[in-house]
Image (cartoon, rainbow, N blue to C red):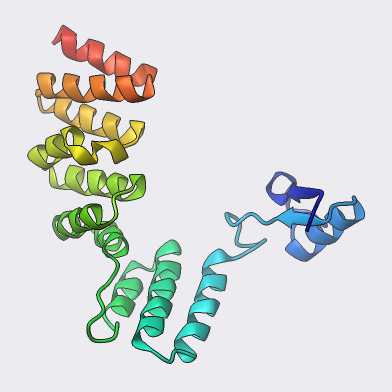
Length: 212
């Protein structure tokens, strides 16, 4: 499609024709648009979890190999995770074919969601080793905070994986260390955050540490 296109999210409303995808698309076509960008945050317009689950069932049913079945189960688990069915997602991952293991990021996120932060730290640490990313780092920070793991947070903020921390994660670690009275460590974390992101919050936190 060469266009023009339009992002539908800005037009969603609880009245016709803005309350359903079919009528929204027809409305956009009447306005001369050749394509639409479909939002996924509103299940009434497009239920992403349901779509993923439907696709996953197709993959599993047609699976001719354990690898394909594993991919389908992971897709289905992500769909369950996205709608808050954490225990169901974990149960699905426990049915993976022999020799296949759950994605560490997904499993770690699920464990944190059900309150098992200790095991989540272990699994998400593996995820950081395998495929470091801001998303994995964010989940790991939250798991470490739940555990009150001061050493783990300090190591993450100052180690090689700190490159994957965003400003919010740095701030969360800094506030935690400040509340624990670890002002020097807090200052180091906030300074690093300010140098990378230049955010006012990090500068304020640095000032608070210096006052202490």
